Length: 283
Ligand SMILES: [Zn+2]
Image (cartoon, rainbow, N blue to C red; front, top):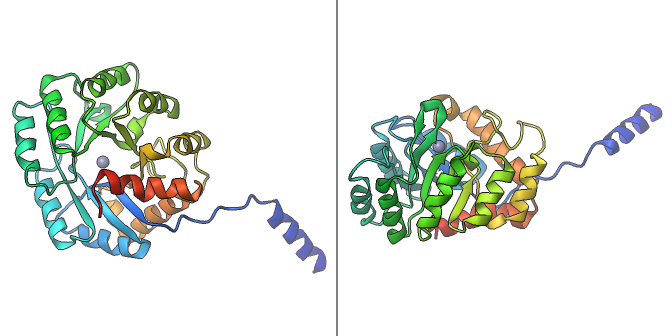
C-alpha cells in the first residue's frame, strides 16, 4: 500500500501543473443566432459561465432574418446582448448608404460579420472594391468596428492590407484570425494599427483551432497573443442549432475559460474583456 501511494505521488508530480481556468470577466465578442428562440439557451449558459456580454452578428446573407433576431434578442436581454448590424453584401451598390443610415441610431456596436473571402462558400470579394471602401469610410466616421470574414491565404493578405492602409480611420476586426498562421497574422498586425483579431471559431470543433478540447493552447498562438495582448478578442462563434444545446454550450464556454487560463492573468483579462469593452463600448 505504501509503495502504491508513493508511486501515485511520483506519477502526480511528474504531470505538468495545469493552469487554473481564467475566472475574470468574459465577453463573447463573436456569435450568431440560428433562430429567434435560440438566445434563451445562450443566456442560460452565459449565466452558468459568467459570460457578461455577447456581440451578436449576422452570418453574411445566409439567414434573411438575422437583423430581426438580433434586435429581438437585444430587447429581451439588454444586459447581455451587444447588437451587431448585419451586412450581407459589402460590395453592393448602396451598401455604405444603408450602413450610414442604420448607424445613425447609435444602437449597433459593430457591423458584420461581413463575408469578404470564404473559399468554402466560393465568396472572394476584392477588399479594394470601391463600394467596400465606402463602407470602410462610413464605419470610420461612426467609430464602429467592422467584423470581417476574410481567409488569409496566398496573396490575399496584401489585398486586405491595401484596404486597411487606405482607410486608417476604420477599425477592422479579422474574425477567426482569418484562418491564418500566427506568422501571417503577426505581420498584418504589425503593419496595420487599425486591425484587430478575434479568436472566435478556433475552438475544438473546428480547424485551425487554438487547442483541442483538453489539450494545451498552441504555443505559437500563445506567444503571439502575449506579445500583442491589446490586439486580440475572445469569441465563441456559435451558429448552428447543434452548438446551442446546453451541454455543448457548457463544453465551449468551459474550453474558452480553460484556454484563457493558460495566458498570464493580465493578458487573459485584456483578451477576454478589456479590449472588447473598449472596442464595443461596454460600460
Ligand atoms: Zn462568425
